[in-house]
Image (cartoon, rainbow, N blue to C red; front, top):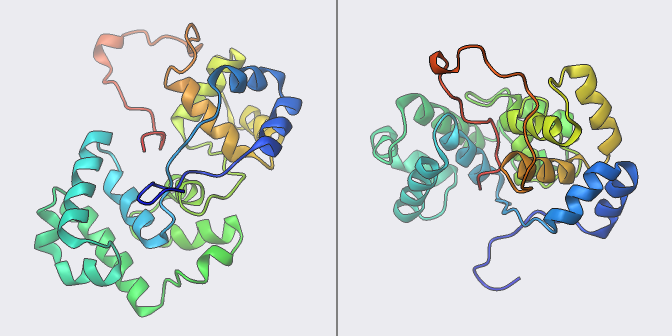
Length: 234
């Protein structure tokens, strides 16, 4: 890896060949799209803060706030967050509630209540359980940290709207309920993370001519559009 180059999610032929053998439709998508390079943040505290910053705002807004934080604070860790203080953190463009979440995480990391050294040694479930105990962290955010920080190989999130959209597009389903989702999760396991990368790409329009088979809304003009819940925005 060259100096200054951001790390990317690691996968290779083992994962690709497994998924292609398990699911020819996904295999065809993999061949069409080719390798996907997705950046990761391999610092756990930084990743937690980054995901809190990005909740319920656009990718552009998240990138702007994150750039301001990096330029002003330098390294993003518990010490720099606590030293900055609430007012300074809000000045980067975050809501008071997000600053509260970030400061709470920093205090717990500084005190050792959140053991950032030990946490990566835990199972996926144990990590999710610990992360969701933090203010502002739900299951979906915890799953994205598993994938885009800890690079766990089998993250496949039912809470991610773009993954559900990708499944509908590839397999021509009108709806993905939990039972159907679990069928695909088992099929792609133990490499659900790589399947997620390709389904995010499909949902984002990477394969020309594919459409979403979800039923159309009766009164679309009265329904506010929502951004797909996905971390395919890094």
